[in-house]
Each structure stands twice: as structure tokens, then as C-alpha cells.
Length: 81
Image 1 (cartoon, rainbow, N blue to C red):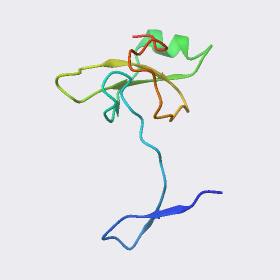
Image 2 (spheres, one colour):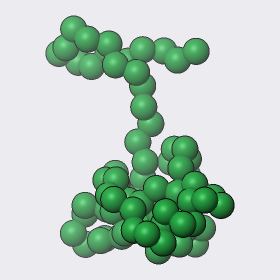
Image 3 (spheres, rainbow, N blue to C red):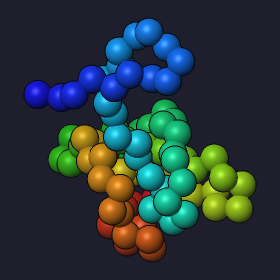
Image 4 (cartoon, helix red, strand yellow):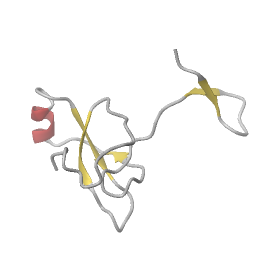
């Protein structure tokens, strides 16, 4: 069971969703469309494609689907680019 999160200044209740972090700079990542090779890889191990919007970082890669951990390795060693 999850605890509802009430956004400050709003009357609505939103479910609490952890943010995905960039493995390189630990910033918030944005989801982008997968490539054909990413879709094929997802047949064996589900992945989603993300990019870091931070200009100095510029990381683009795949993260495991459903993994919302903030404790990702800083070097991105577990991810295929």
C-alpha cells in the first residue's frame, strides 16, 4: 500500500513516484524513444531509454525497466549505451 502524496499548493492527491537518476551525474533523467536494438534487447531483459538533460553531462542510455533506485553506480557500468 502506498501513501498518497499531496503536492504543496494543490488540492489533489498524487501517488508518490520515485525519480530516476542519471548514473553519471545523479540528476533527473528524461525518457526518450527506444531504438530498434533497444526493443530487441527488451525481449530478454526489459529496458527503457533515457537521457540526462544536463548539458555538461549529456548521458544517453538504457536503464532496467521498473528499476527506480537512486543508488545507481556513478560510472554507469551496469548499463548498455
